[in-house]
Amino acid sequence: MRLRKILTRAGMAAATLGLGAGLAVQGVSCADGQAASDTGVAEGPGTAIRPTLPLLDLNAPKDFQTATFAFG
Image 1 (cartoon, rainbow, N blue to C red):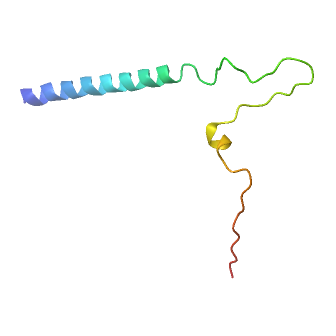
Image 2 (cartoon, rainbow, N blue to C red):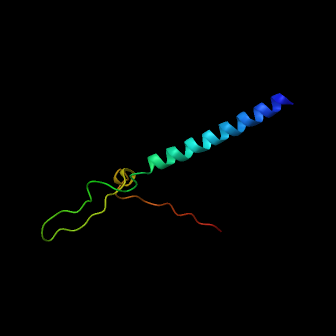
Image 3 (cartoon, helix red, strand yellow):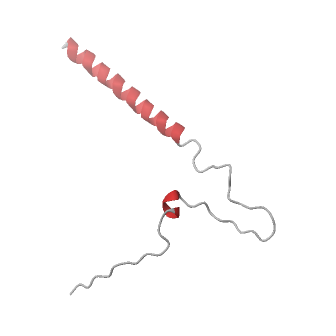
């Protein structure tokens, strides 16, 4: 009976530490968020604001064809 009590307390302590560590990692990794030093805004007259695209979109092919299927 004493062993069960010790293991229960150890399990609760491990779960608490694991949950705390998981939340701390999420908090640290999301600290900067979308903040970036380069806002993508060029200075001067007649310049347009261009959003920064993700690398996945930059590497995507420019023209692509889609397949059509007939059901019937």
